[in-house]
Length: 214
Image (cartoon, rainbow, N blue to C red; front, side, top):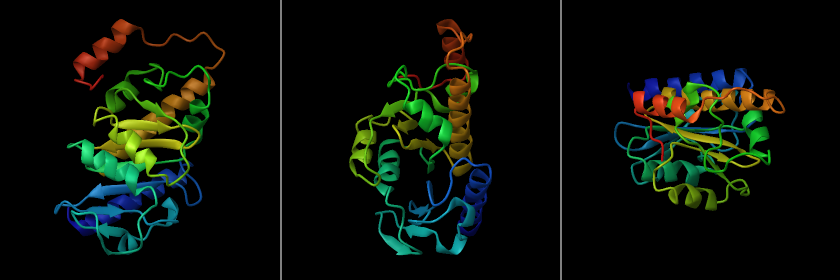
């Protein structure tokens, strides 16, 4: 994919997320690796519904802005994933409502945020780590991701939103949608004795699909 095509693809996927209500207003940010090791990043204060391919922040391999508008203030989050996960080709961060709601629930397991309701979140995300609340833009969010030493492809920022790294921008978007769908199911089923996957079923999914499960 050429850089021009990647720019268009980022904006197309971001608009799809926005149009379906997965992040609103000027919330959320998205980035993807370029062939030269640099990054294309959504600019600060922009809406996923109206990203301009020509104004995306273009960073070189050292993280220096070389063209476009100033990048999102959440760059420490993105950089932490790229620096600790060699397979990361894209990072997406949303303010999706159901996952944020689930992050506020007292029964949530901080080490394994999503309950095992379907195999798909396990396959696409592995275990999702729930991180504590940070002020928006706080570099400590990036420090918390670095503290995971690359062992998680996704984290949930409490009272804020999910962040997912994928091999490319489409994979990252698909995975974060699965995270939100699973959180929505979990909220729908609160107070109901639902039949989640048992430990043997989870292990079978992890083994069959070679899922990172640390």
